[in-house]
Amino acid sequence: MEEIPKNHPRYDSLKIREKLSNAVINGITHHTGLIAHGRGEAFDYILGEKTNKYTYEAEKISAAALLLADDPVVSINGNVAALNPGDCINLSNEIPAKLEINLFHRSNERVNKIYVELKKNGADKIYGLKADANISFLDHNRGLCDKDGIFSSDVVLVPLEDGDRCQALRKMGKKVIAIDLNPLSRTAREADISIIDNVIRAIPNITYWVEKYRNFDRDALKEMVDNWNNNLMLKNICTYISKRLNSMF
Amino acid sequence: MEEIPKNHPRYDSLKIREKLSNAVINGITHHTGLIAHGRGEAFDYILGEKTNKYTYEAEKISAAALLLADDPVVSINGNVAALNPGDCINLSNEIPAKLEINLFHRSNERVNKIYVELKKNGADKIYGLKADANISFLDHNRGLCDKDGIFSSDVVLVPLEDGDRCQALRKMGKKVIAIDLNPLSRTAREADISIIDNVIRAIPNITYWVEKYRNFDRDALKEMVDNWNNNLMLKNICTYISKRLNSMF
Image (cartoon, rainbow over all chains, first blue to last red; front, side):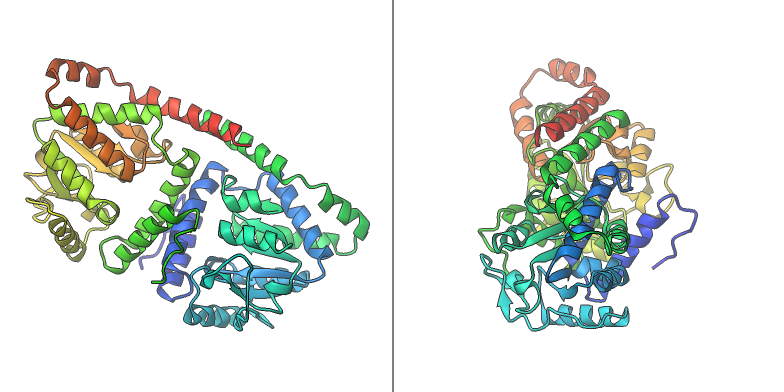
């Protein structure tokens, strides 16, 4: 692969594409993960490739919800494993939360490759290999999860999740925090807290607030989480995008 | 590849992804075509995954322009070859127009594979294999085209085109009809007629109007094409998107 010149105006974006492309070649990311990434790119572009104030608020609330959880899990898929596995491990250590490999296009080979990648990045215990339970309401391989991982968790952080799975997790009574750049996606609408941000910015932002909030009064955190209006945040983001689009032409 | 559950609410979209994914494996579509598809998906989502009235008008005008052309060409790239080669062949027969394989990431191997795919779908003569001319203003492989194909054409339909090439074709004095779901892209802004639609809907729509307009008075068609205001259409679509985003929450 030819080298990307450092002065290229789209250097960061091209480096990320290169990372994902390599991860597809190495069997960590599924082909269709590139399509998902392209979708994200489009929304990120429309959003100005930075965290807006509404999303920043969602990231704060997510940190609070993760700290309040009895048994939180950070779910890892093929794109996140390629993009910023270290950040995810760091977040799971800081909360602390379990780390579970959970794939839409699941294959043992890919699970094992991601396992090795996470280990290489310093992960300790990793869930998702046993796959001895099923997310209720879902047939198909995409429902597989660990009984003592996602299955029994109360709060799950799902970066780049499928809409169906997001809905199924909620039906199981879990609090779902989703990272998805598309504010209109089923995932974004279904989740309890939707983070309309690039995972590369979102995970470190949540981690920052986990550290800040660690010793906060739990009742105060609970009040913040209880008062969160996800729908209003999505509405605000749509208005924000809408204004941006009108100003771009 | 595992089967996509038929009851998945995004079944159609997932099937299309699968088609592209397979085309990458089979060497018809380039890796980066998947990321480009994802970007398109995002805009299609925002547009409601249907043809809006401004785009429908652009498709009518495109049909008129193709019927009026002396030497029209329908350009085929790796994504279109994977998604709806049959529709493109049908359109080129109906106009009639030449069919030319024209790739951004050009390799003889990929050209040959697309050639076989088009033949399998019933194409008669296919241009783009000789590559004995260059789109002016472009160095690099992406400029290669056939002397008696795109090079000498007067109207070119380019589905999913690169902004640079769209601009270069226009500089050569050709009328460019581009299909691109991103109304903000350089391609959409550079083309004479921009079709902000999914190729899967766009190609059959244009074909429908080619059939309708075939026996229309040529002066009437010419007047329609001459009066087309592409910039106004793009502005209308941005307003349309903007309103849609505001009304969705």
